[in-house]
Image: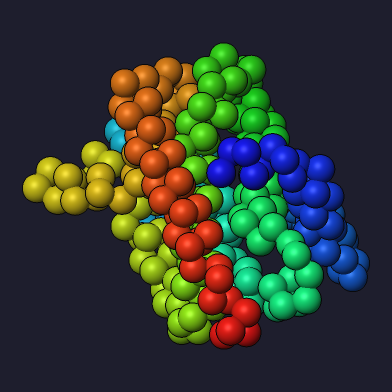
Length: 264
């Protein structure tokens, strides 16, 4: 897995740039949408949940609509990256049949292209969040923000593993694409995106932690908004588990790719 990424790094960078450019090609605002999209979603969610439903992020300092918006945006940073990447996965091979039938191409690197494109958008959203933090708090971001890549590493491994598995299944079971969209939506509401973990009844809280996004959102908010270091022990074990999962996804993709040409 790592060797494939390193050996094809130049091709991955080229395809990632092309993928990012194609996403906004033909639109009047072009790349400006990469900034407008997270801002619009943030504005909508913040208005609905903090003004209509009058939700607050706990009873402490994070109780104003702007503080709620920052906590929400930090959660969206990770979940949007996850959702966009996973939603694309089932059609990844189906959308490029020529790469399977007519040329010798390292199909497995397409997962890294999806990952790179998602990280680009996440980077833009991060800049928006940091600017919003400075404007809302009147102070520089916490130094712990530099630890964000460490909290994103297991998320990237999770995305890679799911992308390889779903891209393979999408070739053989065309309904996977429809199912994944509903599962991602369900995951959004079963993740502490619009509410803190403490709002979940204790009797159900352990079930929510079966969702990997629950832990990851908490760690992202710690380093970006709260100013705390991540739970190093738990983060290390989680990263190791996600590496095993990504390796299993890579193995599954390589094992099943032999049948792609027959189906396509």
